[in-house]
Image 1 (cartoon, rainbow, N blue to C red):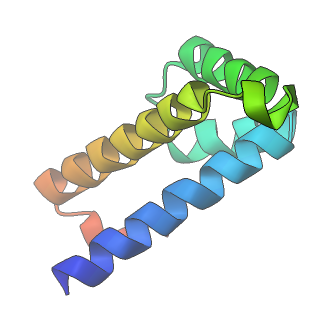
Image 2: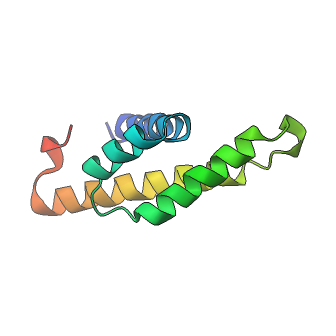
Image 3: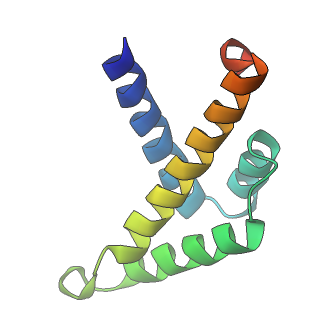
Length: 94
């Protein structure tokens, strides 16, 4: 069950990253609604950097911004999961 949970969390983080890069304001608004403790300025900077990197020619892309955004998303989601498990709300999250 732990492996399935980890795989699901990674897929959710990948989905969030794709949405945040593709969609401008709606995705950020949904993210902040789901993760209210987010450093929004840092999130917007990471999104902007990932979009700039994606706009480059494939041989010039480093992928660093894309990975940094993913790590930020993953850490934020894990932090919220940890907080929910401490308060007993882990099963209530959708």
